[in-house]
Amino acid sequence: VMPTGPTGERSEWPTSKDKFAVITARPLKPVPKPRLNARSEDVRVHLDLSVVQDVERVRVWRTTESGVDDLREMRPLPPIDVQARDSDGEDDDESSMRTGLSQVDENVEPSKWYAYRAVAEAKDGRRSEPTEPVWIQTDEPFSVEGKVKDAERNDSLPGVNVVVVDTNQGTTTDAEGRFDLDVASRDTKLRFAFTGYETKVVPLEGRSEITV
Image (cartoon, rainbow, N blue to C red; front, side, top):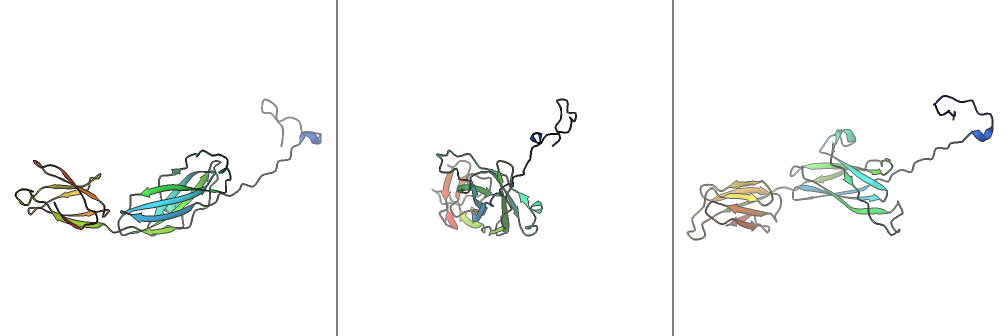
């Protein structure tokens, strides 16, 4: 190490041994890989992760068929920030695992295979090696059909708006009051709306055919 003066100019070479400092590089401890599990539910992929205590962020990548061996060829998902958790001293061991981290990937297609890999980032910038690819096949859409009638006259009602609750997905009944709709879950709720009639919300409860 060459000492310098206050102006940044090189000073004289030290002549006594007490002016030298020996610097030893400390090897950085590798960050353990996160634990990654995937499950398909309602045409969505739910990712469950576990990381060690000193991890600040987890990054996840997704692909379909090609590029699973190279993260640069995979699509990144929004990073997961690991929130600080109050500790009473029992969780100070950085080797202990923090569970309960999750992410939902909604931008997937039904009946398709996807691969996911994850990397953990420590607070000091260190990164783990990527996890091995975790493959998951998304669910098939659930199809429901039905008919809408006037409750008093029992006449078929054409043009009724049938919409999946909390989404923009929907359809309208045909001339015979019938409809056919693909939904993400057997527990979906459908909203039926028609001018001059009271809006009605009907849970499917696993049924593939309903009459309203």
